[in-house]
Image (cartoon, rainbow, N blue to C red; front, side):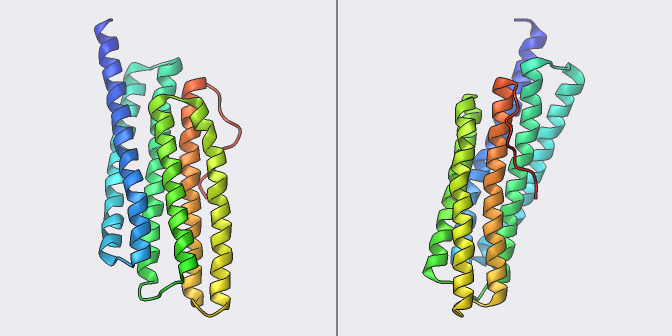
Length: 224
């Protein structure tokens, strides 16, 4: 193998490792954020919010490395797709981390207010399914598996269904006087944040599918 190719492959592996490290941190942060919300943990909320800056810094570092590779090496075909996909996957992870920070900010806003067991149960399921989606997205990335990447769309349907269930439960609790309007509004936002976290996992799958097959999937979630 030529020396330049060896060095290029080493840089690709370093970028890949950095993306995986960032993704692993996100997978750890999702259930932690859910527990912060359920426990009304202000200290934990502050930690997650501050940690968002770490995701931003990591994303910037990966992006700069990818841009340098594209500029200096001018990769083509699969190599180019790998670099571009790494940048795009990093952006999806960073946006998911932003949403976790938003959930923690909502936790602060409703501090001192309690919500019933039905709401708490659905919150737990939302967090668990969002975590599963990102774990599956990482697995697809690690294995370069287009089939696993494509399966994320169907996994996301369950998260969307939970989102709808949670909104109905919020309206029922508010109508029955168990939570006030402001708490209901914040919880509705939380539900939306979890749904979007799932959307970003689906987008990661789309990027993996593109890298492996050189074909874009028809369905892709956009930032909303």
